[in-house]
Each structure stands twice: as C-alpha cells, then as structure tokens.
Length: 219
Ligand SMILES: *Cc1c(COP(=O)(O)O)cnc(C)c1O
Image 1: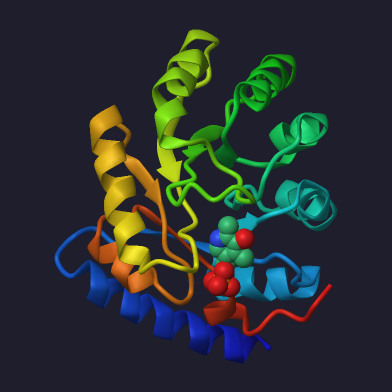
Image 2: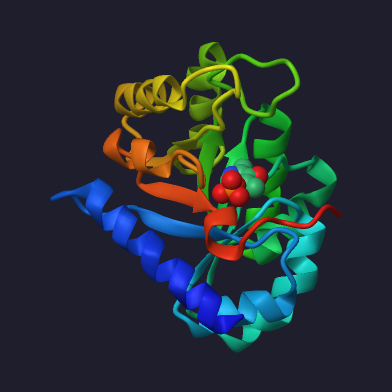
C-alpha cells in the first residue's frame, strides 16, 4: 500500500509542478474521506502532511489520536458544516473551507472563543448557483465576509466545487476573480479530474482524493 501511495504521490507532485510552471505550486490537500486510519498513516509515512475530510465525525474518529501524536499534520474540512458540529469541527480542523452562512460563521466564532483556537477559514461559494449544493451565493459574499470580520473570524480564502454541467475552468476563473475582488489570497479549487486546470487558473489549494488513494469504495 505504501509503495502504491508513494508512486501515486510522486506522479501527482510532478504533474502539479508542471502545471504550476514557474509559479509557486499549490498546497496539496490529500482527501482521505472513506480511507482507513492505516491508509492515512501510510500516506503520512510517504510524506503527506495536509489532509482533507468532508465529515466532522469521521475526521474526529480518524484523526484525534493521530493529530496528538504528529503535530506537523494539517487537517482541512472540505464538506458542509452544521451548527451542531461546530464544536467538534473547531476542535479537530486547522482549516475550515466550507463556511457559507451567518449561522455557521456565528457557531464557529463562538467555539473559537470557547476553545481558544483559531482555524484558518475559507468561504465556500456556490459558483454554479446549484440549489442542492452547499456554498453561499455570489450575491451574499460581501455581507458574509463583513459579518465574519465584525465578529472576529478572519476569512482568508474561497473554495468552490464546480457543477458537473459546466467546464470547471469557468468556475475556477470566476473564483479567482472573486478572490481578487474581495482581496482574499487563498483559492481552494481543483480535484483529481481537473486540478491542472485549477492550478493554471491560480489555485492555492487543490483537493485530491482518487488520484492519490485510488477509487473510494461506497460507504
Ligand atoms: C471528495 C472530494 C474531493 C476529492 O475528489 P477526488 O475526485 O477524489 O479527487 C475534493 N473536494 C471535495 C469537496 C470532496 O468532497
């Protein structure tokens, strides 16, 4: 398993460097959702330090002990957050990429104070305006960013998941433009199928699961 992971990782890192060309390569967030603790540890052993999980409960189960043991590990929340999970999310995640509404920003802010923790926060934007998808609308971004700032939550970036119906590059370019407009330096965009495009369009963080760990089995 380690050998396969090392091979996949080396291959991906090469592709990332190539896509970044002369620019600084983005942070690779290895998406370990539905992967076992053993697989996560094997990835750590071959050099992965940044992991992404989409469910708070699963992340807490897999990473609580692991993070206590290895302090150089960074964990990103890349899935939707509910207010009743804010406490656990602030406890385990270093980066929360999916803030998207007032209630969740408030809940995270309250937990940050209580736990004296300061996770890095991104705003998820529903760039395709899909009714079933998480993320704020583009129209609400200004108000949400202002609200977050007013209550002491610093949002440093944007995250998006492009709709399947569109070429992802449209959404990567749009997210980049929005980041520029609001003065946010971080852009989390690009997955296994489209990360090279995302890098060329300015991604600072790419979220890769399948291309590193292989196809996920169904839950
Ligand atoms: C699962 C997931 C990924 C990784 O997807 P792959 O296609 O396996 O690289 C990236 N981002 C989010 C938000 C995800 O839920």
